[in-house]
Image (cartoon, rainbow, N blue to C red; front, side, top):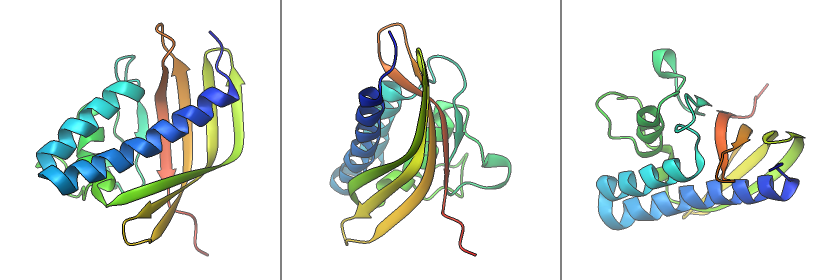
Length: 157
C-alpha cells in the first residue's frame, strides 16, 4: 500500500499528540505513568519492531547521541534513567500543542521521508522549534512506522 501526503500529515499529528499525552501522564502520575504511555506510543508508531530505528534526538550527546533501540528512545522521552543519566525527559516537559511545517517530503511506494519544523508549546506558552527529519516505512498491517527520526535545534549564527 503506497504512502500518501495525508498519511504523513496524520503521522506528524500522531507523533505530536503522543508527546502531549506523555507530558500529561507525567504531570498526573509521575515518571512511571509517563513511561507506560511513552512505551505504548513508541510501540504504536516507531518501527523498532522492524529493526533498529535511526533516531538522533534533539538533546542527546556523546556516546548516547543515537538511539537505535526502544530502551534508548524511552529514556530520552521520559528521563529518569540510570542507563542514560543525561536525559531530562523531552516528552515530559509540559507540552500542550504541536504544529508541523513541511519543507519537503519524498514518497516512494511504502517508504517516505519528511523534513520541516515542529513547534512544541508547553503549558506556560513557551514555544520550542526543532528541525526534524522523519523517515517512514509502511508495515505489513498498513501502519506508518518511523524508522528514521533526526532532530536538532535551529542553527543560531
